[in-house]
Length: 241
Image (tube, helix red, strand yellow):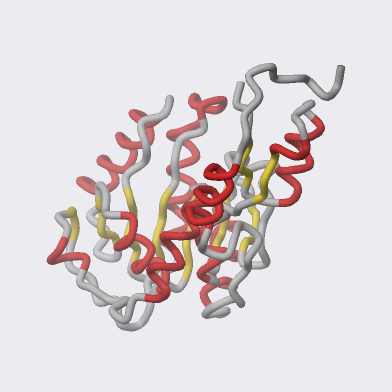
């Protein structure tokens, strides 16, 4: 229904045009979330204590020798498997023997099952390497990722912001299927050994070169500039017709 389309990559631009949109009204401006990542990179202070600034559950961990961030959401088309998928990732992280900062999932279908598995693990297994956090401000979360050894899970932050930040990522399952990836991402299935092997490999990389696949960090400025000059025709045409 939109007249103008602001997309994040060249391939996304091609896809929108193939849907019949006017090519002169489809703009690759990059993703606005990269603007936040760029601001974080420019910030002189990139470290903070997550245990004092945010409440969570678990023992205070020593993060000086490296840590892994886990963010795994349920997949709406696979909500019946949410509990199993969470257990698989938990098993892999238990065997990683590194401090784990695990973030709570979003509220998509299946989140109740995911949360229940995490609560049972937290209360009954009491693994000293895990710390569970509900949420965090976007800038702080990206700072946490910059200083991490690896991100594990299926969040879009691993595909977009982490490619710009150069953070190693292990992407699990189908949630990000079809999205373009940088060299920082290893894709695996819900298999404990695959996740464990990929995580160990990524933890030894330290950092990847920053990818501009999803933008240069100036998307907001580009979008605002384009909108200020756009002439909108209320008689929208389908270019496939």
